[in-house]
Length: 313
Image (cartoon, rainbow, N blue to C red):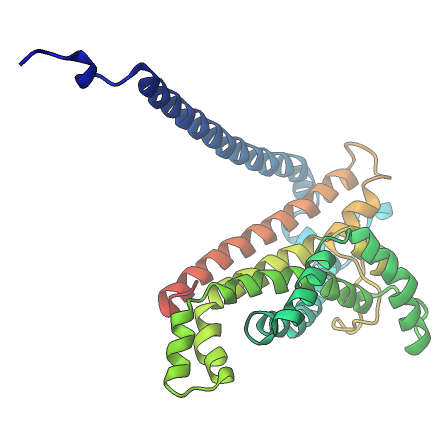
């Protein structure tokens, strides 16, 4: 049989296409790998920079004195973070309660109960609210919420822990609702149809099938919102009062307070570079970063355990 090279070899255009695809895949892989490395390096540099700038204040004041000190008074070089930690904790808990009580039922309604028309109206409205800048929420909080609290609760000023809690709680409802709805809609239809086929009602299916299956995504959304609430700056700065002192009693939400971000944003513009006050503000940022990191790690661990138990989606 006569040798015919055109049968054994690929046409030149086909070989060129294969080579271009191969080099294109390698280029995309290189870009993605480089992006991942850059992200890791940026996070490492942030950790290093915050640690380097805050270590002086921890040495001068003392770690225990700084974390458990009951006064934050920069004019007297007194830097105790306990009022900031307590204020951040109270605001986060109250705001999260508002988030959960409104956001999760709204997500259940949109994913399981809403009709086509209702969903077509509510879904875009919620996504639009999620994109509103935080300064707009803060401005509305000063104009409406703070004034309402002053008039109806006989407060000297409406800027308080309660105002910050309500504002942040309402502000992050759209984000929680969107993520929880995605988690609920990701549950396979076979699970729901099987439950209904066995005689369960719609609500029983939601309670015993859909929610447990989507629980990992819901918990991840809640933990993510905790990080957003505790890391919000402008809205909280406008309505919380930014007075770093312990409420008396410590759970008094009508008193003024301060959170990590409001202290940094309110004082960093006036501080002398290189002073103890300057390094103490970086220590506040370092503690905030540690708290958010612990929350993220905890969320991943909890989500993994729930996925093993319920087979979450």
